[in-house]
Length: 468
Image 1 (tube, one colour):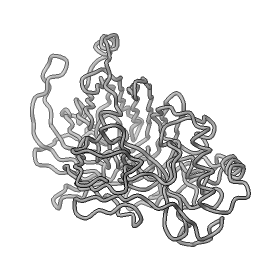
Image 2 (cartoon, helix red, strand yellow):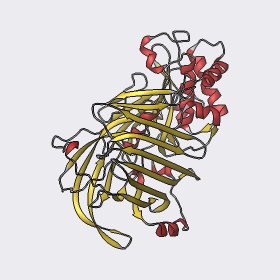
Image 3 (cartoon, one colour):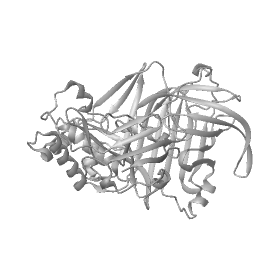
Image 4 (cartoon, one colour):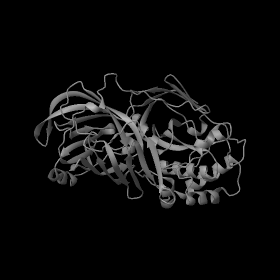
């Protein structure tokens, strides 16, 4: 639930943040989490007064069915906020049993200071903000709002600890209606919450606390009690495959990938998407998307790249740990004395393919952690390959989108490497360079941008116009 956030343009009549009525009430709420009606896990949300401010803590213990494997995830977030629920400090941990992701930060004036795990674990990143944000919460609104009125539209600047970004949220109050919770009716307000990657419907009580939430892909969160949760935990789960829930069905037939030279699709669905025109394999004209087979890649420079326009794609980040000594050491061992960017990309692509165990991994990957565990799904493969490439001076970026498997398209991540004049693609999960026209790019960027792909899931449809 921490992941489900989306940037939106604000309505002109949005109520200013300063006029909010905040409910100053302590709380300790438990929640059932279901996916398409099947029990998935439990959540707990606490709101504790601490002198002049509040301590907020959300704990989620959930399980996902990923291609027949039940994977547990624990997400723990805590935050210190002031009396108006504006951020003072926070800590987040995501543990999938294989990889753990941690992020800490604090406000210093209008600077948001994030602790970054550099090689000596002493790195920090400062983000200057125009206003102090509230923090996104796994189980409810960023601040408990009271005295809501139908028609209210409320803007809140929100910081998301999962990806380290600040954005605006818009909360629209749709109606006041009684909601049945645990065989009793509770006065509730139904609100629409537009965040970075999802459009959610929430029901909150008179103190602004979450009663029920409807999320994308059939995820439901409902307030409960420990006895009811204990009873449900003993039942049969029958969790639906989460990967299949996110699949995009295609109208029309596509021939074998190996012989495909062009794929032309009509993009359908209720979304204001910015699918990239990448200039070398994929173009979008209105709702018509065309992907063509790439020529075999050629490079016109020698490693390391000295092109100032490529500095962004050589940089180390919170997730792409190209400056970590162990990543640099491994990259040099893989590439050796090879100076040709295409051959270096092939060496990296193949090494990642051969050495990473293919395991569905619901976590937030960084390259050093992946190098330690040597397992993961397409995200881990792409993160490590891009980091290894950057470590030897080969500009690279992550592509996120869809890949054809059987009759549908599924979420996937792969790599773009820089050839000097154009990018060329590689898929370290499948060990291919270049990828086929059935790889559809939806966005480019670091791991913190991947959450935006959620806006496509369950809403995007494709119709084949040409395939041959």
